[in-house]
Image (cartoon, rainbow, N blue to C red; front, side, top):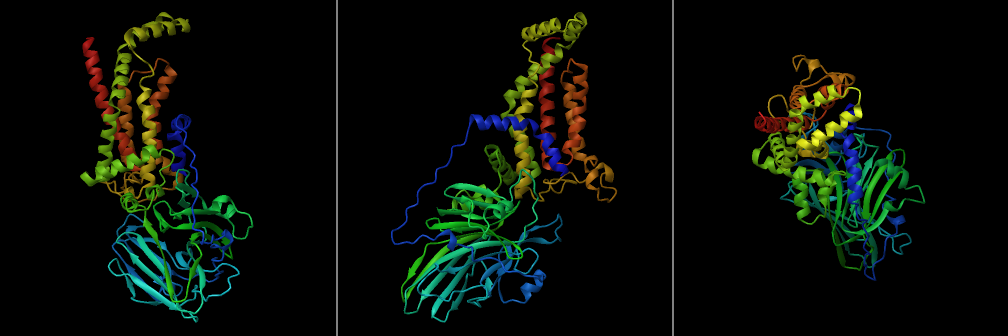
Length: 579
């Protein structure tokens, strides 16, 4: 909560900029394109979607290891994942991200993404077949209790796995899983009709999340449902699913059921995501649901078209699932290979026109320097070069203001009781010397959106997660760890949250010093009260930014140093001309 309060202080001025931008550049409304369907295809009604796939009531909670050890499974092993597929039900319910730790410690627990039903917070992917209500021929379909047989007990990027099951009607069902070295599974479900009758089935796929997950609940971050349907990005929190998409309700909001071609849909956390990706040429009905059968049950899924399968005929249905870290590089690669707008799963926010380029720029610099702290410094220098003309004009005006201070003081003494006359003389003096008293604010105002956008990038992108700099800065996405209240790390003490505002680190102190030094180069305000307020600003900003990400404080410190150098050089030139 302390970081959220600090952020409110830091972005006050940016709100006006956001409003102005929205007024000047309003977003055009997206119009859904009509979907052409073949005449012999049947449309699946929303009532026959994923509503039947609700979680059951489980009263006994077991440990993850206990549940996994007592079931027959296919082991998954890649460069980025370990986990397993449960052969009972053919459910992908066990995934651990091997490249990421929960804490800044190589020996700490790895990030767990999927967990099986029966644990504290089940989270998994399931798929299968269903029939329309009233179908003439009832087919014995695989379900959660189905015992599948596997072609192999290990799934790797080099070795796909096929699961098979034959029902009592001699209809064979298969699930083929393959995986790459990152986080993308390719899943094909096949039906081979060896019966003597024509059957009709439709495929379904869903991601199920049981119990409300622990979320950061930070206003600049989206966690919950995320999808791209009909080329339109949708973000809904878990509360929206609970209120608007209840399986027990006869009326649901329009977004709960939508027909689309291609796209993707799933659940997103801050850094991790599980997403269903249908064949981009297939028409699907996307469904978002909440149910409660003793437990909150959140579901994101889709169903395909009803398919007629003649005797001795087989059909296949393809699709993918992404389950892993939202790495910009990985998402970009998948987008280049046919998944539309996949990088938009990262919460770029209102300032996407800035946050996206900033993120790409930082990653580009990182590719050359190999350290995100150095990448931030390089990005800061780039911003100074871009804003150089504006800063140059502003610093020239401020230097002229500083040169005029003796004359301004003389006017104050000449017209001590006639404020209007003094203001008139001051304006005439400014005009004569080409000075602008508000010019010094322009670089700051322009940098507020950049500052906020960089904060957003540091907060939401996984590239900064546990990214080290040098010395005591081991995580650029976290505040400076060496604070005053621990005597800069000499006392191993967990500072209580209510004292965190006072626990100022080394880097924020340095930032405050550079801000104070820069202020000394500026002309003091004519009003004594204003002068006192401005003199306090470096100390205020030191406390405010102390709880921010170290990478952001590093950016502000380097920016101040470059500003000081530019301002000092300009002032020396102008004062030398008038010496």
